[in-house]
Length: 305
Image 1 (cartoon, rainbow, N blue to C red):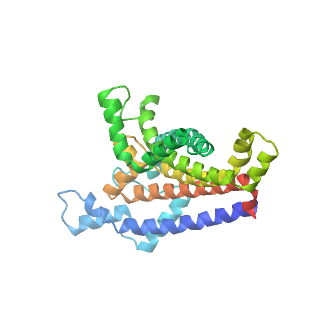
Image 2 (image 1 turned 60 degrees about the vertical axis):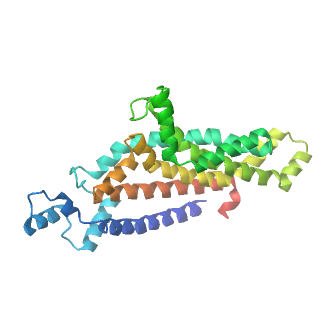
Image 3 (image 1 turned 90 degrees about the vertical axis):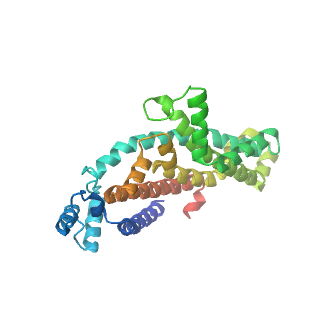
């Protein structure tokens, strides 16, 4: 078990190193921030060189990367180019908003998606099954920005019962969390249904029923555990994406999370902010993948071998 986890941790560290190099090089290809930050009255080469020196862009590229990497290990990504504040502080300010929205959306998706997928498989070809499949298809096909706009028009402009922007109270979570959850809920429902159908047709489930076990025990105790693997995979990847900030949803609902911070950093050519946001994104993905791998082992002990 510990060897299995150790291998995954080493793979994760190596992946982070590769991502850090790619992120560092990619941000350098987007343009020179010194040109953006030069005041309108500055026109001489001396002014340009002075700004480059202040930003540390006068050093060789390899030296800049080593400085970035050593700071990233300590959680220090430097100062934001725009407002000269520590990038770590900006991340920590936005992280609670993203965590709250991501967990709200994920809990909603799991609480509705998992039972709906299982019941859809158990009640195959019934009215419930057809309704669940339609719900899942709509959730996977409808673009998030369109769903968000339609909900804003309905509940904000027409009915005027829910707030449509900001993060002031619990009611502000309802619309953005549902928009985030619907596509994930749809995926969990479809995966849960197909995985459960496969398990229900297996020999050991038939044998359990021949032994006289009740259908409820067969479905929820024996079949569900073996049908969880694809659901865990999809849920883990989806949660990592939510923790990284759903840019579209945060932009539409004016939600002050990591997604908007990353988008603003890209538009402003703010290297430290973009690098910090992408590295945080990669860390969340790798951490979530490690947790999912550990859950795999508990769901199916054969995986560790």
